[in-house]
Image 1 (tube, rainbow, N blue to C red):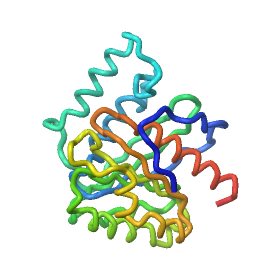
Image 2: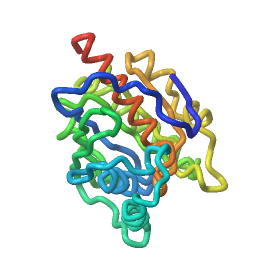
Image 3: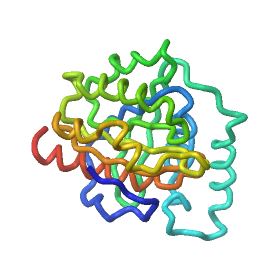
Image 4: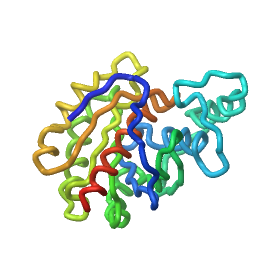
Length: 223
């Protein structure tokens, strides 16, 4: 698997997809899934035709409104945890595909709801709170429960080592080791671990471009 720094996305999108990529957004409660999804829908949801500074390339003042909206989306005081499931449609910039994302609440009461949404899923986006090492074992258990489901065998698993802006955040390599990502590869899952800051969007777009590339490769192979 690959462990990447906060960096510019590679030009991996190539051809457009004829159908949206169905993505399961999973993780324990309080790992930052809802904040991350709100950032994405604010930047790339329906009606957002511009590429914003989330691309880490364009810095013009014309994106000020996008930045204000994104800051409001990331305001933790306004965000409530997800109860059940939430769906969102986004389109990656630079010729990227459309993503149909289903976020499943991370509380134990809702965590098993992913089973009702895995049919047709082409990738798992798994968010980990890097600042809470005490729950890494719990996160690994949940991740393997998902990854060993027959409906999801072989699908790409992208792990976001989130909250990297916090002082006690584990580095991405430590998160990868704690989750035993090499075991997922042995089970046939293409994997990728990436450092992110969901509240600002740092690193998220790069990880999604990698997700899209892995899905594209899998589609080309007829999977």
